[in-house]
Length: 167
Length: 294
Image 1 (cartoon, one colour):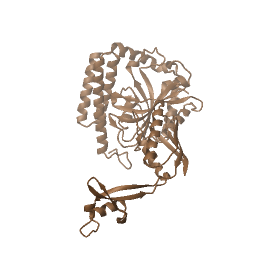
Image 2 (cartoon, chains in turn cyan, orange):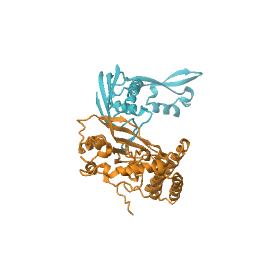
Image 3 (cartoon, one colour):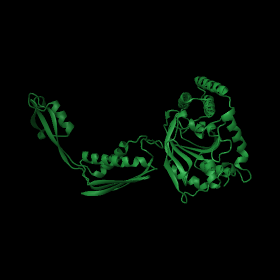
Image 4 (cartoon, chains in turn blue, cyan):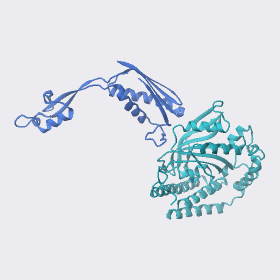
């Protein structure tokens, strides 16, 4: 299901000349991030005052899309030992992908035949990802001069004092 | 509210916020930032809260006591809150109330101003605070001091006391400000303003000042070799004021100007580094549990 989200970032007076670029940078960052994380959203509107950035996301999916991803493993000729048991190389590959021997299949790539496996990734709840997404967005913003404040490990154009998020 | 009451009210207010009340530093300087209680204490990881009134001398701004707004020496009320508390803007706005400015009744704005003092290798981000269109305070979050990154940032608030007094007392001329109810600002300072103007623009001895600048620089450098941070810093302050006098006198050409500024900056940078090193060797005593008076 899709829901609407509101994020407000409370800041101390941002100089007016930075606001327009910050709005478009934030919007672009979120669109790219949602696409990368397979989270649908209808559109994003950002409004700002000197002390507040308000991000309104319409129709944000409550979960990431689940996907099946195909991974290429070792070449077939080194995937098994003489007695046709899985070799260390194959076992390591399967362990790394969290897959089982019965799921494997073979495809030719170049001149060689290789082991392949498909792993399905179950989409997470969007809610659980939001904190990292928004933190990443704030850290990704750039200004001609940015600052640190109060001993905190973050830079922004002026101090951020509060957040509000409704989803 | 007279000038003296203003200072007393601000001191009392900031003391309640945990600041220690210091006195002005007894060496000529252009701004409260150069008082070592700010310049040095802004460095390193130790917390620090202080306020004081600083007479600030700017020879080039001297006007023979004729100009109603420009002074050879004006007064700054300086506050350092390190680290800056999350509600520092609110704390500041409340401080205006104690001197009779109700923020709800006036147009108070925080207007972008990226403060820097290249001579002391210092810069920060913040605002000029405007009261009905007039600048009354410089509000800065220090980012670098003495060309060193501030490990723990300070909020620096610098109130322009004469400007605020002009506004509060509805006066058009700084010399008409009531210092107390009996004594005018001009009674105290007008003659001195005239004399310092004559000295700065007409009578200062350029050759002596140039010699002094070189001597002060040499002494600061020598004292640094002995790791005597405070005495060395005194000579940097003296050299800075001497440079300001030479500048007002027109004794320094445009091309030389940059090199003099660089010389002061270089000294202040070395002192800043030596101070941080010294505090480190002392185990940063103002971090909890330390002892700094051994």
